[in-house]
Length: 563
Ligand code: TNX
Image (cartoon, rainbow, N blue to C red; front, side, top):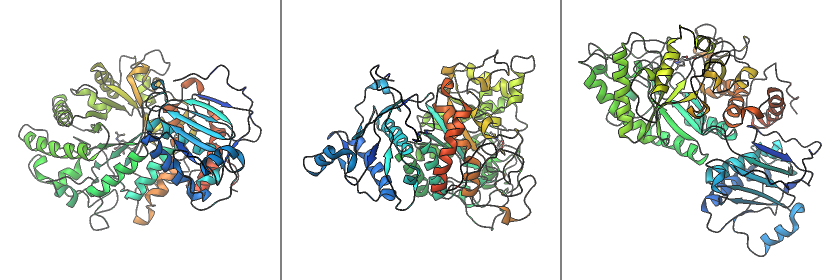
């Protein structure tokens, strides 16, 4: 990343200016200069040949229009009106200049942002980097900019100078749409949340015991039978709950416009009852069980006996091909978690077979850390979901199975995505008063979600035994499981009335913890401090109020009064 110039203006924080950027940028100077203001004459200027900048600019202009009411022209500044706006600057509106012609030292997602009274300049090397920079600019605007209808300015932006780039290339979140189905609109809302905090990977947990959500050519039973249930909802209580190809494409395209890749997960060999209920031939004995809508984990896997393997291989070929072809990421998640009663040979067969199909689609394999026990293709990613119990065993003579699987995968060259359950699991309760979620990995309050490091999450508790280096960590992911997305989640539900809309559950479990995980993935470890993060969270809470997000007003955060 380009370092700040030595002759940069002196750092003089401006009193009363709330600069609260999440995730914290790599370099930030709040300058003494006058703030810029967006006004009726503001234009977004791009180089004539810079189509990508124009695209990102148009998207931003559209966003700005809702609250400001301005129709901001985007493109090349010409003589006349636009020129006048350049000249008159502050009073009628600063110009915003966007460029993807920044040097390649900025990397894929880096950018610089420089705010002066008359001119706001964002430079990046790619459209993605520019989008990240525009996201920062959005956070520098007053919170009313998040309003869904016309709001009052002035639309001031503090004079700052920023140069920024992420620590990790993979910054994800997962939606479990299998236990609780999310309509397309709910998924889009979640993508908006991700984009606001510069996350770039949406992992869709599309299949589990309780449901199958992806349309697969040639396998209509998967959606006819497998999509008839969700946790607590038996066949006939609604649904079917799945995405048509057009709907899934809509999700992928919406995500792509926000520089979020969609990674599909087809879980197996366990967590596959929806597939087993749909396809008799993947069951030992060839008999399909009824669709499952209960709350257990650890149900029997697809049949891994030699006789059943051709049918299971044909199934994997079809479903992983579809998952790969319908999604945007160069990664397919093959699951691998919580498989009861499987031998090492059976697990290895499953992982190898799934890996071959994914590789044939020119994509890489991702899986829960258990797949480390199998043979992995080059470039694989292991998603670590162990917790402090596993960490405590590292370096002792009795490492847990999770740690052994992780070591086995890393030894094959796999890199790690850190999703420690006692830090990054968005389905854990913050505290015991919460109506939703689980607590098997303990309570995860905001401080716990924030104060951890991806490398040390897979090291012994005292840090002396490391399993991965910084380079072997590809990034972080916050999974939102939906096993217990209903009120009164300490016991099983007795009525469907206990289920809240997915967006209600999501807002509560995600905010304020998702921004914490986003910062763990983006900002350098040295730059992070919980107390200082908390101050920024309070400011963001006011933005969430404007957006109508039903976040958890966690008692350990000094929230501002709702204005
Ligand atoms: C464990 S974490 C699971 C999921 C559950 C989750 C609930 C993992 C890979 N498997 O099946 O939804 O716990 O917290």
